[in-house]
Length: 552
Image 1: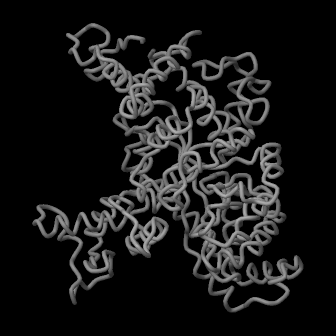
Image 2: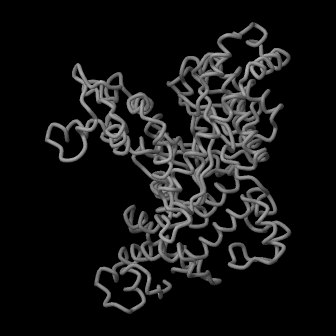
Image 3: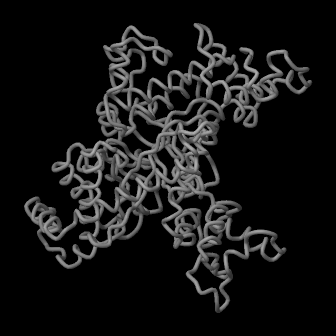
């Protein structure tokens, strides 16, 4: 293990360089792992260490020891491990319930103690002011506070007859709905702060901006048999009607929402000031959520608005909106009924806006949740009809028609799967050997770990890395590959650092002679990194890997 030498480091790091008397705890195997974890946060943040030829081997050996010691030691090791990106995050589901209760008190929102959800004021007729659940709580208020947290999340959840994990998970969102949009920047700050604490550097947050005008216009125009048949000429006509009716008027509102959120969270984090929060170093981009459980004309209009918003963001070179995704339960009646139609809508819009990146929830299903016929085509159609570049969940891949052929196609086309282990267990009851994670890896389909709804699941990304490491016997190099894959398939603009897709052995030509992550890249490489946000982020990940490895 490398010694920490900066006098600015926390006390546990100082004990490692011999400047202080080391407590006996630090001589224990777990103590060394924990001390490295604490020290790593400080050194990685300050960029004080660089790797040596054998540093990665020593880090891999330390990782193997942590695995043998169990989940607690492994968590201590992996908490500061550089994780790259979390690409599958619903902003509303990523915020912890405690934050929502605090915000409800600020907003003057009420609590329906019977239904365990928020309600608009006035707080009469049995409704309780959320402000009553702040400050010094009575025992009754504490009990209600605890029940709200359980109702807003999977904490303490146990399935009962007629109420499954699936039901509980998706029911949470309506319960904490109704808070002011003025809190969005605060929520982004919370998620970014949590990411920074775990040595993540990039987030893509799914968010649904306003689209009421588009929805009203679509309802007025209506739906026709030609549209139901996915006639491309009918699609083109509907698109033009929506544009002529002022659909683009809502583009500015969608862009303004995330611009304001970013400004608010950077103000909270004191970015640019001497004591800026570590969350300032987390880059955040946004995925435009489309609601799949709506009527087809609504889905078309919102999808068009989403493509227009992302396209406008890219054209303006602010790149806060970087892609689109379809959300809401995939097993819902409308979602199942209109699935193929929705894939064709996305595919049509892709032909008009080919530069807008697409990630789609597909295959978040299991046998019994829907009829077997419903498991046979969702991932394939997302890939082949809708041109998805990433698949969210992909749990039912083994039930797809010609699953081996689909896996081969996804590997050849580098279609990445966003793996959400905890939410897949909570919603679908799928874990361990029943999860397709090892199948994707064996068939060389790119995969990366993500949290989905960490606030609802009461987890973080480190939890998912620990879980994957234990359940699937992952090596240290496997974990690095997961982190590298996350940034390789991010929707950050620019070319990849790597010469070939998902091959992390050789850098692109301008950086071929450089050591990825070096403090001073060559002039040609520096120019390449300066012209690509993605390559620059990948370079930073390699720097963080080198810093982390050098601790051992």
